[in-house]
Image 1 (cartoon, rainbow, N blue to C red):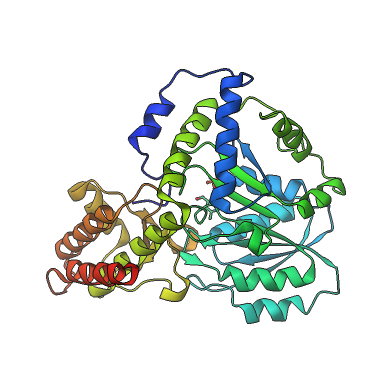
Image 2 (cartoon, rainbow, N blue to C red):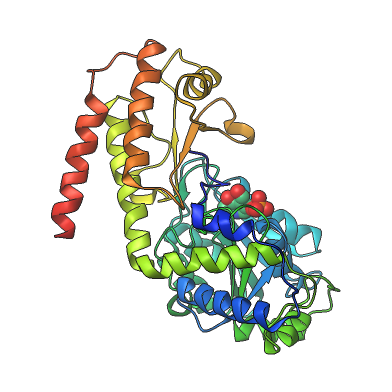
Length: 381
Ligand SMILES: Cc1ncc(COP(=O)(O)O)c(C=O)c1O
């Protein structure tokens, strides 16, 4: 139960095991085009999407490298490690970056952003970077409100959706996101190795004026290749074959059902955790549907919790990152994850907490889980 790499369905594993095919073959182009079309459906967009043989960070760097000139003003909304990464990449490329930061577990509020935006003259702000689901804290930004404020300024909206795309509702075109990035080892249910970047017309216009050199990640090269149903460089063929299999199953489930499943996993897990008297890092209103961050009970150490999960239940939960190391533990519930996984995760959590001496009513998590699930089913009916 880590927030990526996530479990991989057997059908996807079989696809990965196939002999590689030529990346300039008609056979590959057919699979590539089909995956490309489905990637657009997942993000609800008509924008181009490029598939990079790189992890999510590569796509983040590509977003900056293709649009930002040294000296451009960039505002970065930082709610954790990955929001900071976007800001750091922009700084590295010479942008004049201002950050809005909040405490761990908090999201950026629309009021905070509104105030900050007043500091910029009209047309001065080139881009705003933000994270949808911040994996280091399990917090989700209120993107609808934040993005509509950013759109009023004319700045490019550059969003990291690495642990939100295919997990949380996200309509790229309705929101008007210019650069959207995600990665294969999260909601997409395939191993690490691919990232996706969706590029709007406005982002292409920024590229046309951008002096920053790019080669591997260059959108002009990628666009030219896309017109010929391929990629500019040798792609990770097997991953793309596997991606097409994973996307087919996601489209069969229906993207709205996929995100509804993730919301249910989040809410039922949170209900169980609360029933054990454990404190969550993020409020319900801003909780990510991909990952949940939990404080250990007083006097119980995070490494002991993780060790008991692993040794007793063969289950891995993640530690906190950077400043939050050993202060929280994180349970991932994205991708190839079902209600059964939450039930077993909560059962293991109860057993681990009992073993480590935390006091609660036996069976409390499972009772709360069942109640929450019932409520969800009633709502859905
Ligand atoms: C929200 C978020 N952004 C960016 C990244 C970076 O992606 P990668 O590790 O695939 O480079 C991650 C990775 O976990 C992430 O969770």
